[in-house]
Length: 347
Image 1: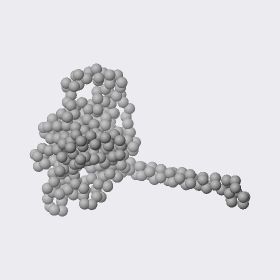
Image 2: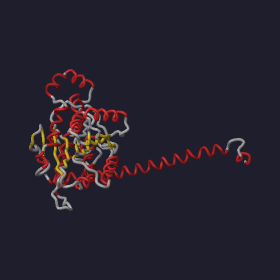
Image 3: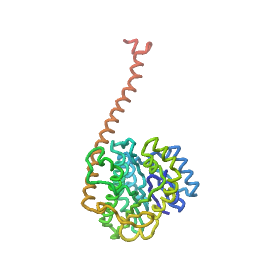
């Protein structure tokens, strides 16, 4: 049995991969925005268990649009004693603002392409790093990143220290390029750790591009976020059905990255597309100077956002406490002025 943390496992390629892993007896932990008690999630997990005959499927809540939620989840995981087992982390969650769509913001008021596609993964793995390195040396641990061909048009050198750090028109591609750069840097981070048992590093990063697939994200991109675009997408559905892969076909590259024995040997940081190892088409992916600059930029941004978030939560608690005090004092004041009460007769 293996234990896998899984983002984006309730739709598209993610749902197909989760089902295939569960069919093979894996202990699948879905990281979801909704709490495990959410009716849709309860039904989804029950259906998945029944379809795969595997009861080892459950969900844990972590909102990738909230740095505070990520920290709560990851800290709880790391602080568990003895260390919780996991063999694999699949970072499949993804968002994209279509051409004519309006950009969404995360709970930290960061542009969603940057906040969810990159910053959430950076923050999650930065905290989970001790738990990854604490896994026994005989365990084949893999961290699988999701990407797509859009990374070729990304531009990380144009990042700005603002709420919308991504260059205009290249938001999605830049978020994917940054994710791939971080993936390579995280592999070097793991390789640089000296285990107390003197064993070599057993955690390997794999980057996966599933190719063009019929997913909700692809539908948003092709429809460009407009009603006319959606109508055109529906009109051209036979073409998309012929030219785009099904989610089950797109899942094959993730399954290959998850189970191919050769990827558990040798150096990590390999790039898989169409179930084959490929070379990176952007030199920045392996550029250590670019990676260090991106790492420092992200660390600084997260630190500032978490301080701001902590201040807001503290102020909100104070306001809530004041409201509760006022609400509890009102009945006492009303009782004091009620005719016939002792206090009213004394007055």
